[in-house]
Image 1 (tube, helix red, strand yellow):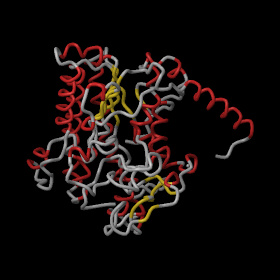
Image 2 (image 1 turned 180 degrees about the vertical axis):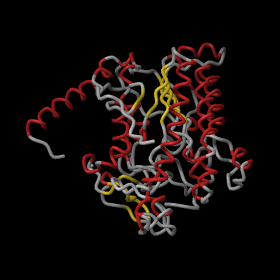
Image 3 (image 1 turned 90 degrees about the horizontal axis):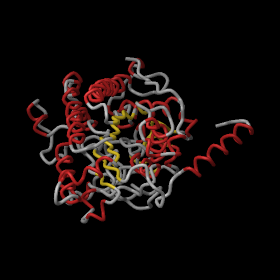
Image 4 (image 1 turned 90 degrees about the vertical axis):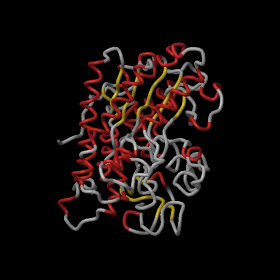
Length: 407
């Protein structure tokens, strides 16, 4: 999921022995955690995507928009204590991944000016971005697609421009940069569905977009490999049926439309699973075509569902209620949204699953990142592919990867 347009808004009990073991494990992990001064697993991190990964590009790309999510407090209040352009109360998955790899926060592409600004990589993600261009939607009858919507081809063009800055004489000089960098391709594609979903376009029509969305993600990966990328992480979509904004918009008296274990909307989560299955199948094809490249699927869906299935295990008291938003059901309303109108902010965002009805809280982002880095939610496991990470990867969980899909 990414940024919505303005038309529709909206944390274990254990024995003392167990706690002792846990304390030892945490101590070991803390000692092994690399600092910025240590040799990182990768020299750079490059990221593409939408508001789930945007760390500050949006205000540069759309300087005349001063009210969109992420641009003003209370966005950023928990960690940064000021708005940074991130659509949450704090850090995002990319921030936790960068820290785990010994890198500082990745520079938003549009905030950098010189080679020195991109010594640790660059983030090309923009809130509201889609995988496909506006023309794709216009041709299929969705006239509401805005002409200035950022899409994957644009982000890739920005990346090529950056390579020219980093290697002005010859792009082949960038081979070492590409080889030693980690590429995070997404999450992207959520907005290709969100925008028509908010217009209540027929589900069958929206579902027909999925092969094209995945094809665009696939071609972007292929282009990056062609430029020399060797390690890519490709996230799937989150369980959008658990988003407060959808729980409000598609509220139903029919109990069969909801998952009894989570209270999320069943058909919307099925749709996320459908997208992810198509994406995983495509990634398997790409692995066969590029056997010397590590293409890692990041299962955002399963990592998030683990939280929705056992929220209290993660300290989450209100998994389906927005911390910041209106006073309507699920903490969202049509008359107010986070940062605008007569909105309200909860006392402790870390107790909530959603920050603003659309985007997760920092607590959820951190739990998902931990699930990817130390848990079973990547395929193949990051620990089997990031060999340059040394001791850090040896500490990653050995839990067998399992997809929580019932398709």
